[in-house]
Image 1 (cartoon, rainbow, N blue to C red):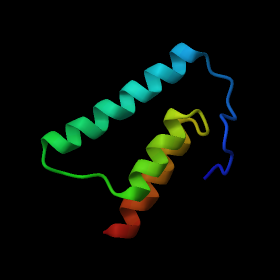
Image 2: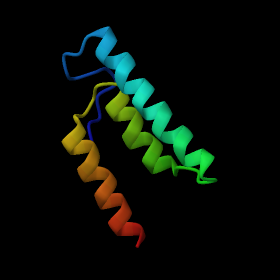
Image 3: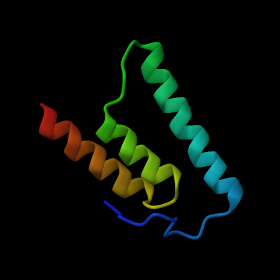
Image 4: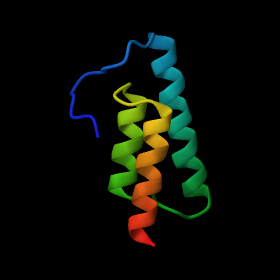
Length: 70
């Protein structure tokens, strides 16, 4: 996972807002279903929202995390 403390992708403020909204929506949906995302899941999603990783990397990391749990 990216270790940068600042976005490494060139994203506009609107794109970053869209990412944050998408992550907040996904977490909200989980909570409606009475599920709480793990700290590892939240870290991956925050890296995506902050522009540190792209969606394919986000999906790969979440899949790897899921496979390590099951």
